[in-house]
Length: 110
Image (cartoon, rainbow, N blue to C red; front, side):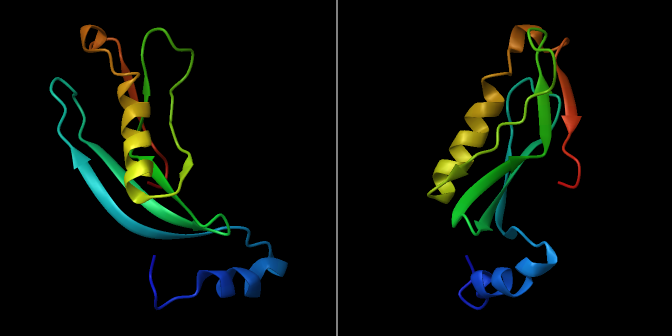
């Protein structure tokens, strides 16, 4: 979270125009996972007014047991928690023995 920009002030100044959330990108991490045919990246943003961190993978994942692609995104108190939650949410659906049947869908506007 940048100390140079007051996200709360920006949010309050624009809320009558429909602005309901401001995000600041904190960082981006890449993961090399054995057998995974894509390069998994996870971006962490700080969100206001929640005052929480959110980690967003660059791909949704769908294993053969799912009806639709999964994207695990939630709010966390720390950068590490957000990153860990997003990585675990992705990997729970990565089943190496089904790697040829797993589908990956890029996250729009990532």
